[in-house]
Image (cartoon, rainbow, N blue to C red; front, side):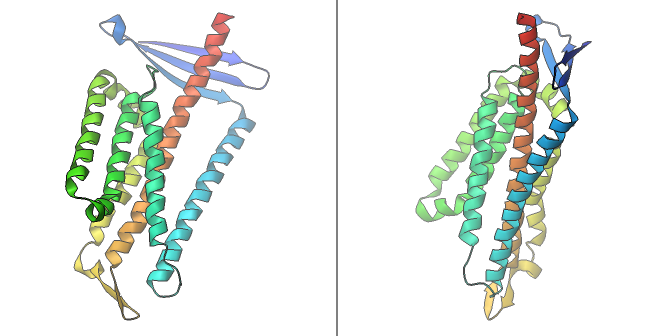
Length: 256
């Protein structure tokens, strides 16, 4: 294994890229892994501030929807926002699926296609679960299962195509913020709701109306989980985009 450090010094910023060249048995399996660091404190602070601002706005929107739905459920509000929450989850999962698919089909050899493929499979699976009520009311389950098989088959085929890079990509991915966010999102969406499914949380009496507290808790957790899943995919996409920009810097210097 060889480690090559490249430094590009510009008027407004300095970019440092560490290139790790792995040695393999065949030339075709040679792998380049980049970790870059931009030495521009002001720009870095502004970039992080923009992300925090946008993430905070989205979280505040989610909290507002949850609050409105809770007020309606307990008889304080006048309008129900359940459908709005449901549609918001659908939009979040569609955006997550589109971003993941775009980077999964990327032509870059070091663009974490295998990781984005898995993220695409997770997003589409959750989207299908979210639309389960629609399939139950509008059509039979045959189409539902066919779509599910199609998602699993597509993800499996893509995983097989990138099987040589999957483990190497994962060894880098599990150290990123995106990995932690995905784990947290899946815990909120799939694991924690099951803890509130017993008889204690099944039905509560509020103003002569029976409300499924378990259903409400599950709905709110899944909404938050879908938001964090989108954050995870965006963070990974930004990492790959930043790596591409670093490549362009040094390739332009070489051509010159």
